Image (cartoon, rainbow, N blue to C red):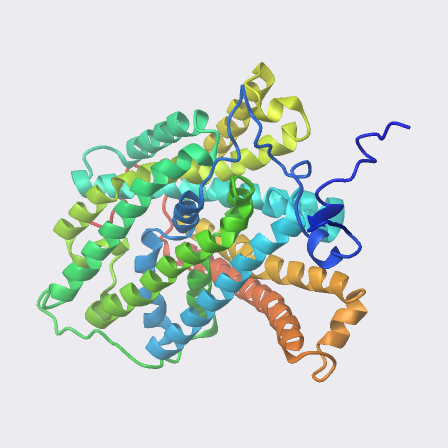
Length: 487
């Protein structure tokens, strides 16, 4: 009798060890978690379509770095000013450790579930259809609003470089036009990885120029002229609940690239190299996040400028923004790519059009990218409190994807390993199994609970900030031409 394709043994079913054929029952702990080519979202065998499995480990490291690291690093000293240096640094170090742990877990989770393409799919594994739809919507909104934030940052940079040469709305339009050109015709992370090399280098150099310039100056550039300088540097500060939660939320947001880690992992050619790529990225991110805020807080204190690249003065800001232009340009369509790719895969998954240059493929891609670009541009130009909206998105969605979702996925995976949720709860009891297992289970639970706490607290603090802005009359207006660079 002829054996059908579905009946034939596969790599997942058996391995050869010497002359002995080893079955999956004998290798269940290893083989059951190994991804197969068939179950992957994208195929490596593409002839007439985009290569969506072409990202190298170094390219992945740069993409992972860029999805986290940006000009926001210069906002971290403000969190020290709010919390005090010691609590601020302790919390930042803790978040660096936890975000590294959850980022590594995402790679392991995708190895177990190679059909997961995005954070939305991961939420679907947890909660079924409701999780899939809500997680997907959250991912789409997170990066669509993030794209709006990148064109706003581009407009700030151009206003600083040119001295507000044209209406700010014009710079927003130019940023959106760049996103259209870059986004419409960049369909894969394989191509974007090469662009990310220049983006990572430019943003890193720009940030360090500001840090070194601030270190070399006798007094903070943003300090009021003719007044006694009081940097107000304190080891511990008594911050109000809203201020403290806002500062913690800002630190979490600075590390909140995890929503995009799933998609980058899915397009790696050799996905087992994700760990190396991520640790390389995270070492660079965490080192910069620790060293630069220490330099700036120590030299500038409470006189951190807004935007932060102005902390060493206008001239240094112009130089820094000029050097950072490749990163600003890249970010406009890099952020939009995550939202568009998520919707694109949802539409064409399982069809021949996903990786073929068919009319359906191109129409779907252009439509999904166009939708993101239009919605993000409208939100960025119409919403008068867009800065607080970005903060709200970070508090609600960034902390969810960075802490809450990975924590929940850890609990889910361990529950399967320990014969259900009751087995997981039993593993929490000290002495009921290896100490390492108990620590892991508690860490997963605390990550989940901590994520919920930061989400709720951050949303509360952001909404309070919006209310205060309206009460103080500091809310901007829609379609404004005003200079947003702080000059």
